[in-house]
Length: 105
Image 1 (tube, rainbow, N blue to C red):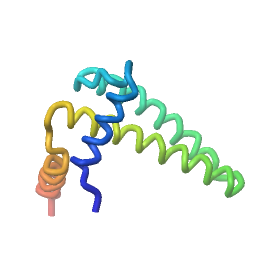
Image 2 (image 1 turned 180 degrees about the vertical axis):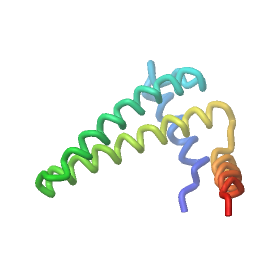
Image 3 (image 1 turned 135 degrees about the vertical axis):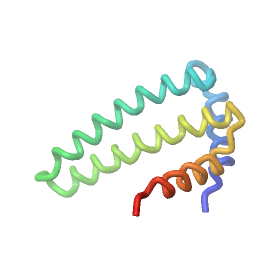
Image 4 (image 1 turned 45 degrees about the vertical axis):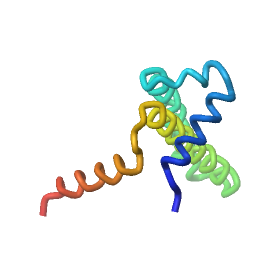
């Protein structure tokens, strides 16, 4: 099992070592940066969708690109959570439980 809070700490430390602009990890700035990552992921998803008739190798390459963009988004959120001292694991558990309660039988 992955410890998301530990991964957040490691990601935060890496961002600090990389220097500007990556070291400015206030929640406001990192969330703005994440918006750019979301746009890149949206583009990758669009490209992946349009490779359906292409060779398996191309589709696999586009799938890896999309997966990498998803990972970039998650890392950005982990860094923001760590910078704000948020227990991201508990926050995710709480969110899933809240969404379960929203399911109408």
